[in-house]
Image (cartoon, rainbow, N blue to C red; front, side):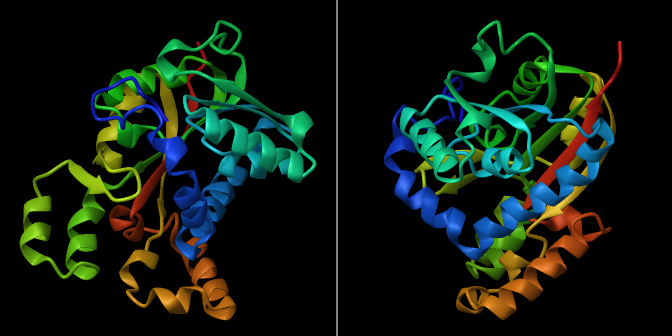
Length: 271
């Protein structure tokens, strides 16, 4: 989670919110976010071959994505600027018997160490970063640099198209929903910061200009956030049905266009 730009929270914000972040991850909406992202990655990563892949997880926090990929046999390097998040990631990997497949590096995407910026990674994840930067194109360019030609790139961002619906359906705040139609910012209670919102159309154009091809658009939490009865989501049977529905909708038009999160997966163009 980058500290490089002005919309980012102050250093230490993510560390102090670690317990709240873990609670969010373990809630149904957090579990859906990770399960759907993993499923979308797997359908692309299989085309890269059978051997272990070298994965770079930028702003990877406490390893929510990394441990899932390490469990599939891949070697994952997490880069994050929050020491407590990285410590939690190392603990999570060790608890799962995956310490040898997960490395943690304190750093920033715009100033990566030379051994990480060498363009040799098979997969780069940029899942938890874009909401905290005010220059999306610069961040995308920096995050693509460590990826080898032909490698897989996965980007996640908060979908700007979802914000008016979120305010109208969940908050019943219709004036705020109307105002959100023309805004690319939202607040977050968890980290007490301003979040940058994006659209898949905007980000796909950036990625194409920066050398990506075959960019696919997926929606994450297409319906979950519009179900206001959060208690039902904790019921195992209801959650299982919800996850099946979300996985069925993730690549289906038009649902991804109003999903709470957008995921773009593409390949770095060969030189």
